[in-house]
Structures are given as C-alpha cells and as structure tokens.
Image (cartoon, rainbow, N blue to C red; front, side, top):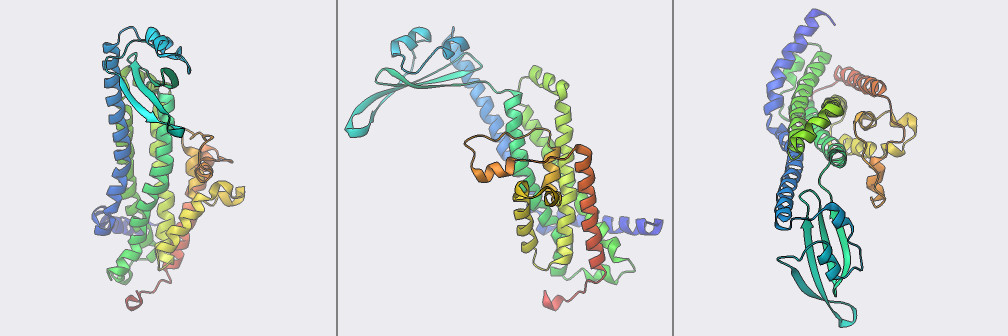
Length: 360
C-alpha cells in the first residue's frame, strides 16, 4: 500500500472513530460490555458477604475445625453432632409433612471454622444430609471465570457488540443515506472498507478490553492479597494477557465477518443468525470445516479449559468441547488469515456496490 493510500485510510479512520464510539445505534455495545461486570461483581460481593458471615460464625463457635466438620456423617444423631461441633445458639426448627401425611421434625445447623462452612440437615433427630462448602480457591474460581468469559462474554457480548458496530458501518450509513458521500469522494472503495474496519476494531477492542480488565479486577478483589500475589507469580499474569489477547482477536475475527456482511447482505439479521448457529455447532463439525470459524481459534487460545460436568445439558456440553484445538501460533495465524480473506472479499464486493436508497 502506497503512502497516499495509507493517508487516505487514516483520514477515513479519523472520520469514523468518533462516529463509532458515539453512534446512537452503537450504544448497545456499552451495555453489552457492562453486562459481565454485573455477574462478576455480584459474585464478588456474595463471596465477600459469605466470608464475613463465616468469620462471625467462627467467633461465635470457637473450636470448630474442618476435621470435625468432615467427621459428621449421614445418620448420626443430633447428640453426636452437638458433641462433635457445638449446640447452636439460634437453631432453625420446623415441621414438614411427608408422604402419607406423616409429620417430620426438621432442624438446620450451620457452623464454620472461618474458612469452610458446614450445613447439617436433621430429620427426626438424625442427620438427613450435610454439605461442606470450602473457601474460594483460584483453581475453582478460574474455571468459573473461564465459563463466564467463553459462554457469556465472547459468544454473546463480543459477538453481538460486533454485529451492532460493524454491520452498521455500511448498512447503517445506507439507512442514514450518507454512504454516497464516501463513494463520491476521490477515494478507492477498499480504502473506505479498511478505514471503517480499523475504526470499528479500535472501538470494540478498547471497550471490550476495558471490560475484561474490570472483570479481572472484580474477580481478584475477593481473594486475600497473599493468595493473589502467589497466583500472579505462578502464571496468573499469563492468564490476564491471554484473556486480553482473546478479546482483541475476537473483535478482529467477528469484526471482519460482520463488516463483510454489511457490504454483501442487505438484511443483517440473516448473517448474524447464520454465524451464531455456525459457531454453536463448531465442535461437531469435521476438522476442515471447524477451521472456517472464529470460535475454533478463540477457544484454543483461552488459558483455562472449562470442565464438562456430568450433569451438564448436552447442548451446553457441545459448546464446551474443543475436540481438535489448534496451537497458539496456528490459532493466531489462522484467525488473521480468515479475517484477511473476508476483508478482501468485502473490498472486492464494495467496488461493485451500488447505492439505491429508494430500495432500502
């Protein structure tokens, strides 16, 4: 590309960047970027509240240990549990009617050692069930964050954010009857395509990248400082940069696809739904077809794999499975190549694009 072409791309970029950040149709992108913060912030608040409650319980019942809590078994009598743990100061008792109208006396107890807590359910003076909840650890929490990132943030928030931003780059200007100003200017149409793509890419990468940073902050803040330092020193920073990189690459890939959709297709709902379905069935596609997908490369680059729970619904389990993951360099190169090919097709089609506002 010559220096003159680069100057023209930068000129289009300057014109588009402000419209992209503050476009009326693009305000949904900010709501989508904030949505994961509500989930992660609520989770962080709940963990903090639970920790305060556990410390209060530990101070109320000194001497409770994790070993004693684990010694509680189903079928033990109330007296045995009280001897092992403590007599509750505020017992929760009620009566439940069972089968045949038989009434059962129920009682719930809760104790904590300050870190873990136990819930004991009694029925007619015997332990009906007991569950121990351990304090949050990075291993478990990292899987929770990975699930939120892959299923909610990448597949929904970034996906539809790119739909709003990139499809509107062309289709929105057709609706506003302003695209012809670019086409009447002495600028090659592929320059307009590249300039609009870079403006949308910068906007989405900045907005969703800032969202990931905020998500990581809220996720980290409910852990003790010592545990956080140990996690970051043991490879946690690699996770942080990986999530940021996946976010930017998601904007690169989805941005190219939906910018091309805005050029090639009149109704944006068709490519958006088709792309969503194609990304959803990616795990069950043959290896050759799976590579023609953005999510295939993004899942391969995610630093934490989401485990498949035995009780997980089949439809959700399919989204988790990544049967043939690509290497990091192959994923980055494959995604960039796929985006370049799609942008080339959009640039080629833009040369033959005719403006007919009366038909819009």
